[in-house]
Image (tube, rainbow, N blue to C red; front, side):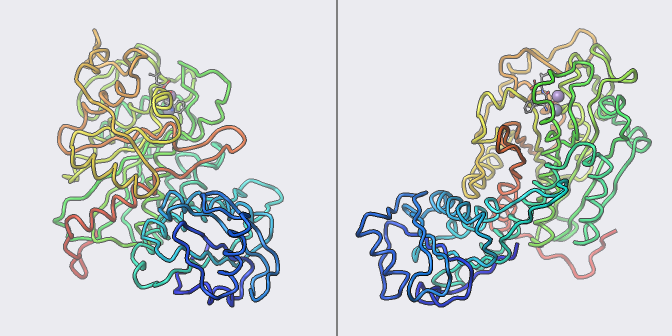
Length: 493
Ligand code: BES
Ligand code: MN
Ligand code: ZN
């Protein structure tokens, strides 16, 4: 979708040629003498419109307004969260109208958060999956103008919001694909395509190379599948080569049947979303390609299927990870940590400033936090705070969970250095404690997105989370410690 930011008063908006206008009416709304203001003032006076977020009033062919459709939407105090609810409701109500050109008028006192929310919510509400429909009902909305009092003031935030929206859409589209199409090979090809478009470095390793490196834990998960595994390495250099990079690691299980510890068949189709972490890393790189921040970022994606087969890894098997630690695999359904641990060790070679892994890791995290906040675990308080702040700002929130050593007690094994599962209690923390063993060389954070990466039921589909959080985090890093700009012609390899 095409987003545009424009300085436009309500009087200007009324004259704008478009299919629909959405006016966000906040508590501080002050009517002017233009037709849109009059519409709002009349409706409020008649109590047909409230400033409560989510409240809507539609009008058709109103006098003095060029657009045939007008949607007045209550936007409460005008903060991001309220704007999000208002835009979601308003754009949702226009879904079947066929509107192609839309103008969204933000409250006069809107902040950066309101602009971000308006862009994100419009993109979210108008997304339509069509990739595998025989008669695709395409997305109608093509061009969206965000009307503000002073476009120059919001320019930077708007650019980041647009990039994030494109990254989120990219992640959603990939994660929504069926598992027979979104294979590890396909993820590798998508990474290569992104790299070509945006000038990233990209390596995609196959089973032989993965074995040669010594990722015995990752390969153990992959060995029961007909689909060959892929290890994807994406590198973006936006700062001097001497600047340590931030490394993002995404779990890329393109289908999680559980393996020999097979899952129940109810809702097993949703385990195609078990590559949501990988999709979020690729989506974040899509946004990076657009934003070109003065940072160095590495993306690592271990990707394979987890399948039952004569060749599958079995409960009781012991494998040697890239770190040298041996792992007793007591439950083949705890496969995410087995592929991530090798990627986390691989990350050491980049001497990173921090490593963040993103994974649909545990059902226990869904129980703990539901679909509202992702689980955040971190060995570094500053990193944890930055991620939590970024999540709140992007309306893609997370919540910090503990990492007390006692949670690792259950991971003891009589036959290997560590077991891949502990008891059911505290399952999300146990999993994080397993990963933590492989992250001793750098500040580390782990986002368990099992509850937030997709929705089930009638609204089944990927959310694209936590791309919004990650892009906001990258932007915040720019402000925190301005990285030196890359030397011209800096070596890209
Ligand atoms: N991909 C799943 C986690 C998951 C389950 C995400 C349900 C979203 C909804 C993961 O690989 C898994 O199976 N985890 C097990 C771990 C257990 C065997 C210790 C789980 O959570 O049940
Ligand atoms: Mn599993
Ligand atoms: Zn899984």
